[in-house]
Amino acid sequence: MLSRTDTVEVWHVWLPYDYYEYDERPIIKKKTLHIDEISPEDIREMDNAVIWEKPNSIRPIFYCLEIIK
View (tube, rainbow, N blue to C red):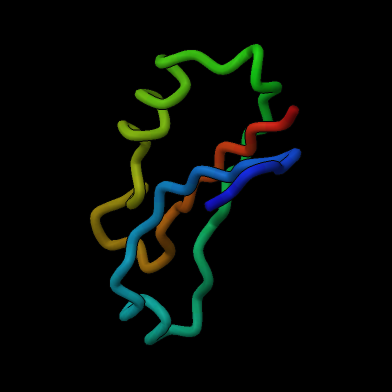
């Protein structure tokens, strides 16, 4: 059980790793918010984020929401 931390990261990722077939790494978009600033809309925005920009893209986009104290 986590009892204390200064930072929590919430990720939205594509789990199948077959895109490494072309040795391409994901694009990572990171947003940092103070714990007092986070809202349900921030979570919805992350949940609705586009993983694949284009239908034939070989690089997924991973999203990280960093929540700090």
